[in-house]
Length: 173
Image 1 (cartoon, rainbow, N blue to C red):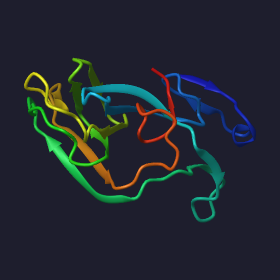
Image 2: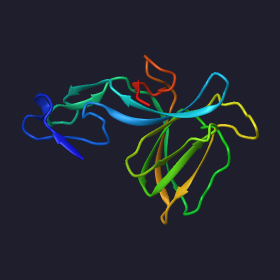
Image 3: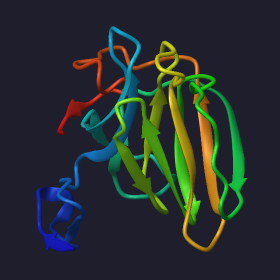
């Protein structure tokens, strides 16, 4: 973990930079399908944040400015050893592990592992079945259940710079 001072907001307290993501951006893994319906994952950064007085009586903090409308949120517990079948995301959705570990594997055989606090945005709703696969598979890793928060949305950001980053922001890798 790197600690460094950045900008006026970090004058009194050092700001934390984790996993190579600057403190004014939020990294997330993006699950998407290409024009042929094949699914992939890309690492993106949400970068539309501005200093606002978000909490009553609190100091200004960075708050996202290009939000999506939510339709539903659910908590899921995937038991130890759980593995799903090939499927598409039921809607555009954020998946945030609260505890435990899980993975997503896409049709291109790319597997990403997630732990507490990692962000995944699922938008493979236009995936097309190929070779018996459609969308992605997922499952738990390790010796404890994966507990996740799923936040489904019915809108996307107004400006999408890169179709690999459907939740907005900038493509990194």
